[in-house]
Length: 345
Image (cartoon, rainbow, N blue to C red):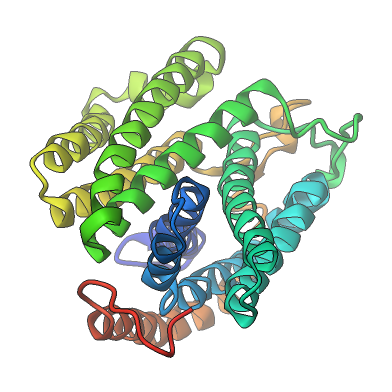
């Protein structure tokens, strides 16, 4: 098996896909979170400012989702096919809500009528909430495992089997995390009355996240023990969950000190470390079969040919720096507090 720096190609591609989805969670996570708070803002001006805080970047953030989905399909086609077959409903709902959210952002300012703007405000906020929740539901099912049989075919029964208790808990945890992340982002972009309102909301978001994260963690340790096997076998690996908890603890500490840029950084690091925990807990498995472990999808039985992976890794080496440079350029261009003008939403 071909390797690069001692790492085989399927594992490298696993890291690439993980990195892309981590970038997506951090970037689209804050604008989903900002949207989830939208109906908490009562003033028209506050809602417009909040929309314009994410207005220049929300569509660029979704580039990471497109690239991540493409990388998953190209590198692990078996995983892509089985996961989308098993969770067809949540993915279709995700697609519908992401379209509805984009339409809401663009259509809201096209008319002055109160009912028109209120309708799109509700649509925007509900779509943002559901997108964050559905991402967590999918992750919860991946962590817990799904009924895969021979040829990695989905053998599930009930139509809404994906809405199991654990998936719902992970969905709520994801929503709480994104809402906290989004509130901190809005604090960096706003001032005045909206800023004062957000200082209260960010505290509520942090409490919501800490409570639901604690419940989900305890449930995971008790009822889904396979997710902590790696850490029990190798105590050195406990450095990762320790770093995760330290990053999470730093978010409220920095937010209370009004150091919102650092709080946002540690919120992003918390997401990265949590997804790193997922990768460590699952590797080399991509999708666990609850029927029989031999039907589980791994980085090796799901990967494309080594030649294909090698070619695609070369493309990543060229394309990834370009995507990163584009992202840095956009955020540096639109840095600072939101200023309203005639081109604003």
